[in-house]
Amino acid sequence: MRFGLSLEPQAWPGDAGAAMLRAARNAERIGLDHVLLANHVLENPHGAGFDPVVLLAAVAGATTRLGIATSVLVLPYYQPVVLANQLATLDVVSAGRLAVAVGTGWNPQEFSALGVPLRLRGRRTDESLEVMKALWAGTTADLDDRFASLRGARIGVAPYRPGGPPIWVGGHSDAAIRRALPRVQGRSGSGPG
Image (cartoon, rainbow, N blue to C red; front, side, top):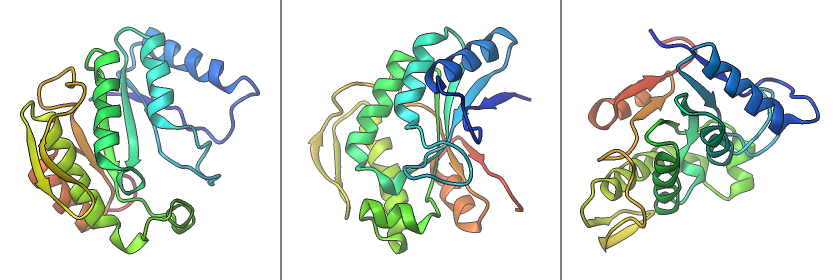
């Protein structure tokens, strides 16, 4: 069994950045396996909306062995080629300590603010997973999806680990389980099911 710490409390003190890095260093000191950070771009009832890629990069620099993970990164919010490069970079700077839990998201207000149709979130998630895995494979990628078209493309930075960081699918629906089965290394979920 592994134990981690969420960096998404309801409120951080005024020096939130320093407090989160202290929390991560303390988590490493007491032997926790990882810290987790969710993905929100607007104020929400679950905690602060810190950018997970940026904050986890800072945590990677402040620690030496502590795993870092998203929980969950809402894939439809991102252009998949850019995100694949960002996550490969984070995998490199963390020396392979990154795990990426992804999901489709749920917040209509955030989808609207980002100009992303909520009704396409499942398809965007599936295609983003395909694009990221293709780019992380270490060969040239050829894909023609609705949200990205790749012809002989190679990612700008190879992930630390061949094939990229492990991907977990977050969620508690049948669709999340179907999404997880063919292409990922784990499932991260809350709630029933």
